[in-house]
Length: 134
Image (cartoon, rainbow, N blue to C red; front, side, top):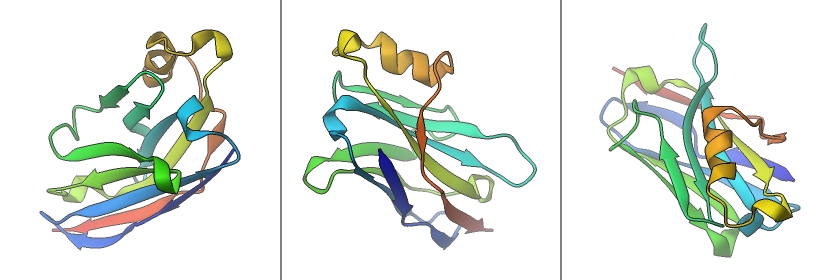
């Protein structure tokens, strides 16, 4: 699985950006995709998750109502639409992917376990910088 993030940049507070995670090497429909971020001096933080297989989506409380995750099957990509950006959203944003085991197809517990950190993603992109100025 290869993941390539794009769409980062510099934006003023209140503005919007759309991040994209291009996926290759594995059917997007059989992957759980997550977005994470790491701000300077802070630990990596989960942001959102989507699983086309069972329809699961999750959002961190800090981004609920502002960020929207979606799948673009035609482009084999996962987008993260970020609206009403705040300076505290400044971070390097990473996408991650994990193949759904055959026995867990359609089971919401697999993406749930990735969301809670019980399971770890196997594949990561190199990240894209998002900077929000005040």
